[in-house]
Image 1 (cartoon, rainbow, N blue to C red):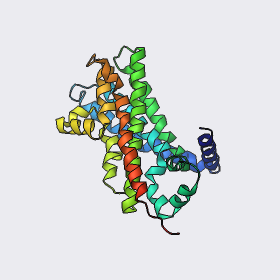
Image 2: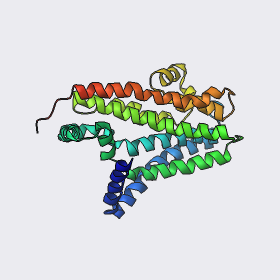
Image 3: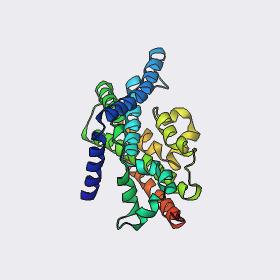
Image 4: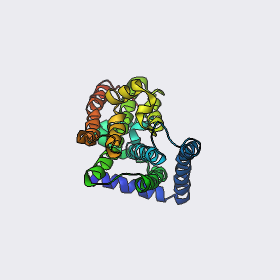
Length: 258
């Protein structure tokens, strides 16, 4: 952790060399995701419910998924940009260093400009928590925290899978954006509104539902099954196949020769 904090300090000092650029980029990130919020707001001005879900409940889903995605994009950005690391030969140097390559890719790129999007997610979350009809207790607070952490780990794992594909294609495949950016977009709403097929996919293949839909049912008292609050922990096991996919890619990596 000490070395990671050192990398983080370097990134912060680098950003502060161009303060205006950092502030404008942060503002831009805030406004981009704010447009999505406006879309939800205007929809609920016309339709006051969505399959029985209230506006504040949708905002709770939206903020949790947005926060999880933003945390992943902030701290796992090195894997999202891994195609360039392969192309310019930087991964050769990473493999020669006396540290684990996963740690070095993680620490090599920390996208702190995403703080604008994170700030919006925090504001919307506080608004949703304040207005939603939930009797908050310790176990529900823990559930909320686990949902956010589970979301960041699942989205981070998807970025690692995207990077692993680059070992064979050199360029990342665009279909992965369906699972990352697409997952953020359709995760704004409870996943059951898309039908049983999508819900099964998001439960057993890419576990969005384990950190979003099922714990959400427990938060909103649609179920009293306490096991639902622990499902975000189960979602974190997605890192296991992700790790093996990454190791498979590393074993088949061929140096650029540069």
